[in-house]
Amino acid sequence: MSSLSAMVSADGKAFYIMDEGSRVSILMPSKWSLIARDAFNGVVLWQKPIEKWHSQLWPLKSGPTQLTRRLVAVKDSVFVTLSINAPISRRDANSGEVTQVHGSTGGAEEILVVGDVLYALI
Image 1 (cartoon, one colour):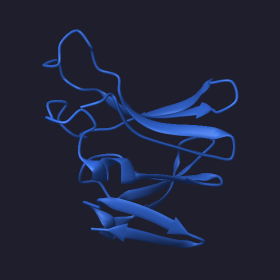
Image 2 (cartoon, helix red, strand yellow; image 1 turned 30 degrees about the horizontal axis):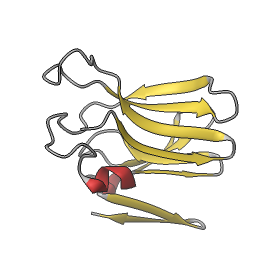
Image 3 (cartoon, one colour; image 1 turned 90 degrees about the vertical axis):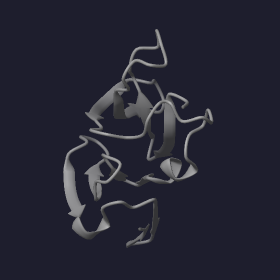
Image 4 (tube, helix red, strand yellow; image 1 turned 135 degrees about the horizontal axis):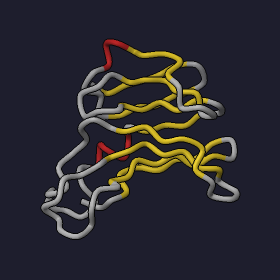
């Protein structure tokens, strides 16, 4: 799989899910993280580990397409699943702290936010 799984931006910040594991060998374990940066100067604002994402041994370089649809940024919020089976959590874009967990959304494959409504394909 590619080291960069998903990337979005909102309100002057960039958010992405990246494998920061060793690149010495594809057989080394992955170390996935959600990272927030200032979109202007690239300074890392915060970083959260992802318990379990997807195997780095996926046969196509880009990985499963639904992984790119599990990260959404809207104004001052980031919606993400911080594990392959975790529910969707809403995080503060400035601090990364959880502001809300949508408990019945475990296993969501896609996230969409329209206005004040969160849609999830589960």
